[in-house]
Image (tube, rainbow, N blue to C red; front, side, top):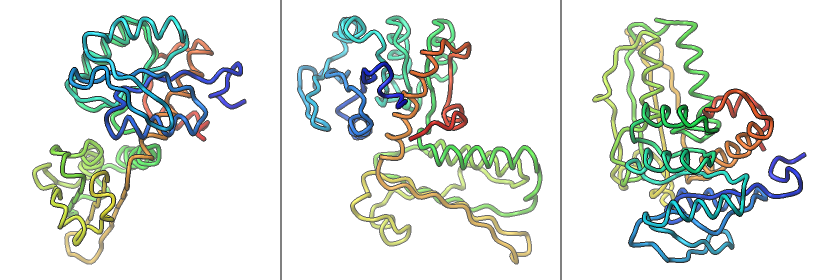
Amino acid sequence: MHLARANDIALPIMVNSCMGKMGQAVIEAGVSAGLHIVPASFGIQTDAGKTIQVGGKDIQVHGPSERETTLASLVEEYPNLIVIDFTVPNAVNENAELYCKSGVPFVMGTTGGDRDLLYKTVQDAGLYAVISPQMGKQVVAFLAAMEIMAKQFPGAFSGYKLQVMESHQATKLDVSGTAKAVISCFQDLGVSFDLSQIELIRDPKKQIEMVGVPEEHLNGHAFHMYNLTSPDGTVSFEFQHNVCGRSIYAEGAIDAALFLAKKIQSKADKKIYDMIDVLREGNMR
């Protein structure tokens, strides 16, 4: 039976925020998967009261002052509601507190915030949640494979020189969390490398000419290249993963919500999950 159609009722999903590109991609993926996108979303005060159409659905934006009452009325109408959060880093903890207070299970795809506090808030509330800064299932699988290699073969690349180049849209100012995680694996494999050595490409001209990013994806991409060279320069390894657009993350977020609904339905003992748990389940569409 398709999880989205459990008990013949489409799983209700609230996507925060529908004004962002990531939120809109999740709504479109949710509509394609047959989920019921509730017609409400949290947004900033200046967007409050606006109605936006995404994936053929009209969604009303509710500002900070309406968040609590909006969520309470949605829970009343949709008792099995799940929230998918792709907002901004400084909203992570406040949003999680509200979801916990309202008893609404959630998928947190937003990066940043105080992560330790985030886990503590959810744990103390005994709420079901999937928390993962990386929602791309295949990228998570690659990262998991790297972690297994680092654990099983520590020092295998001792003495090798590492070069890292990562390209993202110009609005992403910080270093990719995925790049940091992959580098950490290489360090466990014996490579000496400092995060300051990462070559961050944020200039659109360089992205097109040097990296090969298609022009239509300059505003939404993640290109990563890790190059390892042996001490004498005779052996080299290259690891690369290039993502254009946001659909890989949106699809992963929908899979995470379906996974969470299943765990809630089966009253699973474990309540806080990540994308590795979703991958292990093997029920992805």
